[in-house]
Image 1: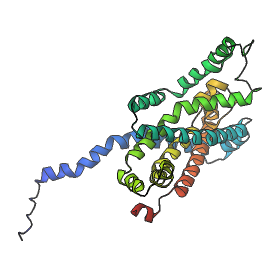
Image 2 (image 1 turned 90 degrees about the vertical axis):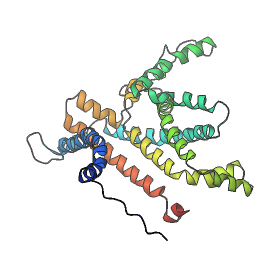
Image 3 (image 1 turned 90 degrees about the horizontal axis):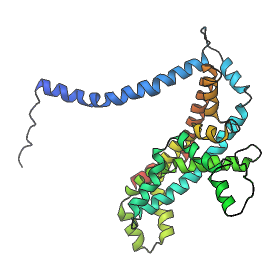
Length: 298
C-alpha cells in the first residue's frame, strides 16, 4: 500500500489569509447584529432600569404596571397571539403540502400565496381598512346584493367580534406566507425513501401525514412557531390602523409611550416585557417540540 501523500505546507502569507477568511466573512453579519440588535437591546435595558440622573430604579416598570392600558394590552397581545399563530400554522401547513404535492400550476399557486410577504404591516392594515370601513368594499357588496340598507359599522368597540375578526383576518392574510415558506423548505428536506417505505406497507395519505410527515417536520414547525410568536408580540401597525387604541397591544403601548408621551423609559419597560414574554414562550416551544437523541439518530 502506498504511503499517504503529504500535503505541502502553504506559504506563510497564504496561510494567514486562510486563517482570517472565516472571520472576514462573518464580520458584516456581526456588525449588523451589533448595530441593529445588540446596541438597541442594551440601550433598552439601560433606559428601563436607570433613572435619568443615574442609579437603578423600578419606577419605570411601576408606571407601566399602573398604565391604564397595560392590562388590556397584555390581554389583547396574548389573545391575538393565541388565535392568530395556530391559524397561520394550520393554513401554512396546508398550502405547503399542496405546493409540495407538485400539482399542475403549483408554482403559480406558490407565487400568489407569497405575495403578502412583500406587504408591510401598515399597508396590510390599510388594505383591510378599505374592506371593513363604513364605505368599504364589504358594505358596498352587501348593499349591492340587498343584504343591508344602511352601511354597518364593523370597526367599533360596540362590535368587538367584528373588530377582533378584522385584525385577525388582516394578520393571518399578511403573515401566513412566512410560515408556509418555512414549512415548505422543511417538507423538501424529508427524503422520499420514507414515503416509499410507507407506500410499501400500505399507508394511506392521512397515515403518512400523521406518522411520517409531521414527526419529520417537527424542527420546521418549531422554527415557524418561534418566529411567528415573536413577531406576533411585535404587532401594532395593523392593530392601530384598524382599531386605533380601542384594542391596545404591548408593542402599540411602547410606541405611544415613546412617540406620544415622550417617555423612552416606560417605552423601554414595555419592550423589555415583550422580550421576556417572547423568551419564555420560545423556551416552552424548545422544550415541548425538541427532538430527542434517539429520534435524531433515526
